[in-house]
Length: 251
Image 1 (spheres, rainbow, N blue to C red):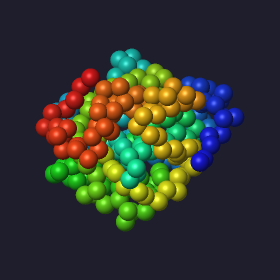
Image 2 (tube, rainbow, N blue to C red; image 1 turned 30 degrees about the horizontal axis):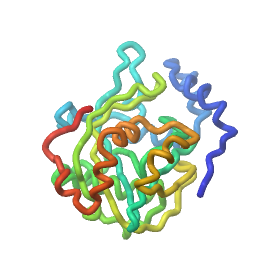
Image 3 (cartoon, one colour; image 1 turned 90 degrees about the vertical axis):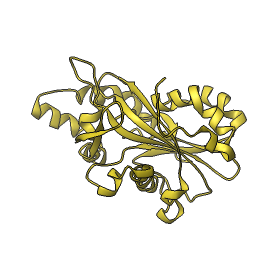
Image 4 (cartoon, helix red, strand yellow; image 1 turned 120 degrees about the vertical axis):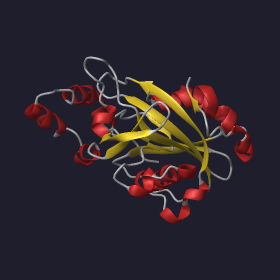
């Protein structure tokens, strides 16, 4: 198990406030305080969508997560959340690294990320093929799971969830989030720049485990846990009945 560098925690509010500046030179100086790999990732191009999940363009990850200073709005974009279970039915939970610029040092599900507009195959919409390919890529990058262990067809696509959260008022979320379930024993080698801790939780221990987390949960994980996750978890081998591929869930 990897452990977060808790000594950085007191500096996080300062670093996050610095990143809001609108003056070019100050912004560059502030970004220099962040991890260079995470800063580079902010340039990745996400897929902008409307409320019906129709692709309408592209914008950088930074633009898609920055809370507008005047309106408080965040650009709506496409994302996915992977819930990974081992053969015993235990769910993997990760703690995001303190290096993360958005929602650092928070607990969340196995992998949460975005299909990228610049990767043609990740724009493919039929049977959520692009989402599945993006999930395969990110599970390999974040958790070190070998590509050959997680093929696109291994993911069970359940539904989409539309949610928004203003985060700390600087970085927030506004996503059409594709929910993917994966039950498989896999090889893990977490990327410490992305993940500081991984653990498997049993279904009957989830409430107690969450109550004892030493850091907050991401808003999307908390939302899904509150509204749907336990029911889905109780039916890992009967998930077909819970598929809703035509409607977008809004809580």
